[in-house]
Length: 447
Image (cartoon, rainbow, N blue to C red; front, side, top):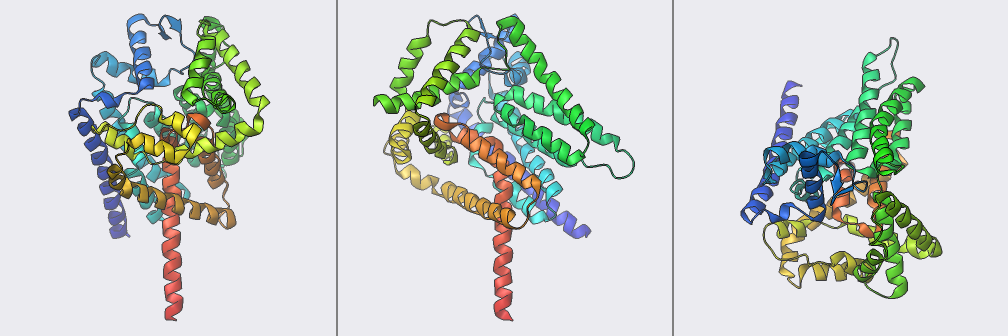
């Protein structure tokens, strides 16, 4: 037993080192190329928000109080902006460590919910070489930190058990900490908001105590309530953030209008931006964006539904092109998302690679591995639906579906990052299922 324990953990340490090395390789390759690819347009806004907090103590952009972006990630990078105001590389190095820790959290999570250590090792292996995780660990963006908090939350969910006999005081603390973690995750990425009720129901299922569920809810509401009060009293905005209104207008409604008017997605975005450029009050702007977007979508709900689901396919694409881009290859022309939304995936790929199709052959191993991951995850999903119907797996199905389907026209592989570990878990399980079935068939033939 000790020998098996050592064998398993030797492989785990090796996979964690592999994860760290792969992420550092891209970090230093991008640094040698100049380091400019560590940031995106969103990154620059995060950095500016953190810098404004340091210099003025105000959470604002261009002198206007910010309600579009939640404060979690700017607050996370704030200490490093204070220590290294002219360099983002320390942020990248810290995120690389965090993303390696995500692989370890995935190991702990899978070992909690499945007895087969082979599945946990394969899950860590898939996550260690996940291109999308490697890329966005090397971007000044919130995905890596958010994934860490999400995995930690799910792990605490699994640690909450219905007390047998005497009260287990640890469960009370776990319920409180889980509520805090859910609140913080929402302030890192507001996309968590729609699934908070699902999380609350899962706490009740695990503890079977309404009081413990109440502890979770109170801690969650305290965290969110602080930011809600800031928005209400400072900006007169009754909400946590306005990003949903912005995206609903600039992406979802824009997609429908571009189709209706027969223009490109980017051109339609410019038209919409021109309509609201004079609205400077953030609360008024959010209200206007939401009402205009809902009006457009309700006029063509079926067209919108079709275009939304069609755009979601982009979430599943490999992120290997970002690796080429970060290491100095000139690909990824602007307007790729617009081409995908109007002309389809293959036209978008052609536009993205600028006709340099030899790069596609270099990308082929990563593409094949991602395809295997998807097929194996689907196999495990089918098995769960037919045989192993534990509620935890259906919670994960809902999370995966939610994160993959909610972006719509704003879709990028980036939005797959938070559920990439869950896909890695199901992929590892699918591989083991296929392996065991194959061995079973071989043994039957021998008999």
